[in-house]
Length: 326
Ligand code: SF4
Image (tube, rainbow, N blue to C red):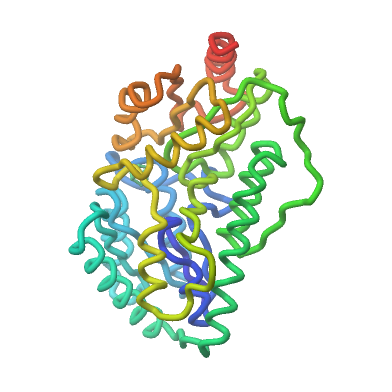
């Protein structure tokens, strides 16, 4: 059975450990090309996720939503209202520094495990679990270290493949000219395959996307393992690792997000930030002022209505932004 995960923070490795096939719904190749049938008031990404989730549930697969925002919760309510659907809501704690937050995550992790068992999953032997976890960690580490070896679209494709079918397809040959272009960060919500034209448009206008901090970009690979060595030894330490690798805007305080972005902005000499958000996503839209204040860099805000690289207004705005950064 395939299990479609609506967020990168749901541990796909844990699904695999149970003999099921994890798929990152947020990286589905068709995402961004659907015509949603949803009501107003739900962001364009949640609408498309819901549309896909309905299709997958109808054919007997499972879907997992997260409680990170009202829109995702609403998506789950609409899919889960059919009693026969294999839908699950993973409640992710909004805070992350307290013991209470960790205990909530731990309980949810157990509930998630029971859900996987209910839909037919069986946890594999300890040795197999260790291999799956170590392989996944290795794949993420390999991708993280490839940010400067590929053009922005190529890097986004590799990350999407990892979330979609677990493949790591980074080529050993670099396809990017290291110092060409003005270094830019793209920060924000999910940038779906149909919207990768934004990355091309930035590069065509003389920019170089050195940081893809969208929910489907480098950020979705999560924090690295806190210490070297195997962590598959106990379920508790695994759960703690899955909890600790979340980096997102809905977390309070959201210092983990800002620290992660800051480290890379400084390391990669970023000169400007493109803030990407879906229409209807107040969480990311509201970050413009905080990002400006935190990093003191020029910000260009783009939304999913302007997401097509041949959109004249989009091209014009990106070109004008690059002029400012030169
Ligand atoms: S894009 Fe924003 S509103 Fe939409 S699901 Fe993600 S966090 Fe929620």
